[in-house]
Image (cartoon, rainbow, N blue to C red; front, side, top):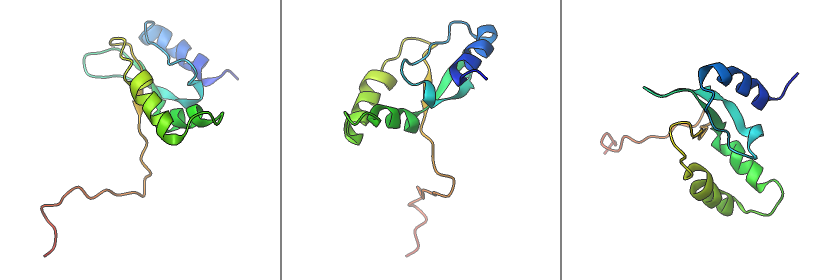
Length: 103
């Protein structure tokens, strides 16, 4: 059985051979996705990428976030740049409707 990156590379070869991969984050690959009017791109777990950055103990959580935002997510290289999804726990509900607060 091949690794996830090689499986995604095989599938994207037909869909978008120019899709880019983020070096060092193969274990954070979720799959691939597409956006309106654009080709398929590789999709990564933002949360897992943070874990990867912290794995060797050289970065704190805050440093890993800063590195991700500046060097990875902020490293746009065109339409074939991969995307990073911030996963939300299914049982976590965030109430953003402050206009309907009970008095």
